[in-house]
Image 1 (cartoon, helix red, strand yellow):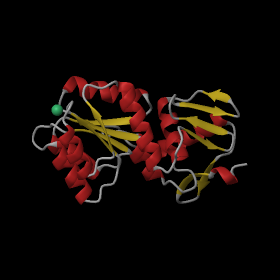
Image 2 (cartoon, protein in one colour):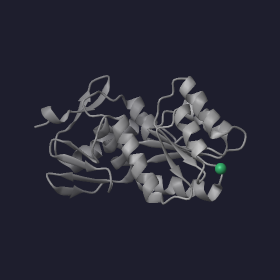
Image 3 (cartoon, protein in one colour):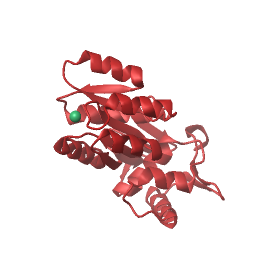
Length: 223
Ligand code: CA
């Protein structure tokens, strides 16, 4: 899972990025509307946190431009306190949710998790695939009830595949959603990570679809 944080306050930007990183996201950051617009327009994000009051181009304009260009990723806007008009303008521009400043980071994270799983078609905080269970609240994975220890990148990989269970995910799609923009990407490493995750899970749920990518069986065919 990959997130974009567009916030001009450097401390706040860093706090949100760190919290998302701890929650298992690859995170890109932007500090003004132009940079944010460019990244959201060119990179595939699973969720975006977008401040409304931004230099160069305000958040409403950024969001309108994304939606006008058919960018459909979930967007959580950050609004000033008591600015009901910002919330209205934000939703009308295509926002999916909002948090008013000042906020508790836990609330932002909970809303982000809800947006990500809703976008992937899941209604609850736990996603299961056969004996494998992903608890998105705690960033925890169990197999038949036993906790599995995964690295941040392994967790991100499994989380992305589980959110998209039932369809084939290509290697290039995985790379785009596992790494931030500064990461030196190498498609060969994906196979290594998939191999490690398979080994740690100890159950055969991640299938290789030759020439296309990987797929996790949808829950009903996993047994
Ligand atoms: Ca601001």
